[in-house]
Length: 195
Image (cartoon, rainbow, N blue to C red; front, side):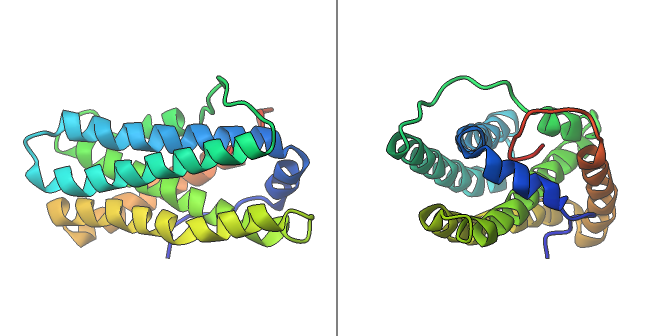
């Protein structure tokens, strides 16, 4: 279970199918940012030895996915270029408390929710792309589901080891409601993996 408070609006899938170049470019940026986030946590919490190896492994896997997406872009004749970032992650992380140890707990859970939403949307893409004439992309997104779900559970487990399951579930409920509210905002935004 991915602990999302609301499903993705089906209109997002249709928008993604209508603008695959933008979606694929943003997906590459998301993988790069996910690796960077894991590394930033390693640097910020260097005294927490139990974070080092799991986050290092996660960062390596995210970088492998980044390289995979660079290959997809290249195969389609698309360049990896700068892209205006989505407001989603900063808005989600704005709900994280600033004082420790709450900051680490909330950051781990926000990262978990980002991975959960990625997993949910990749599943939707894997189901929609085949009928849309993109079987290779459908297979690619299907192949990424297990790792996205594992990343979600990994972040939740790291939080649970430090704060206990009951505290984590209660806080995850609150942050998941915030995450769902962010995606329900009807603001006009460019297509992104998390728009």
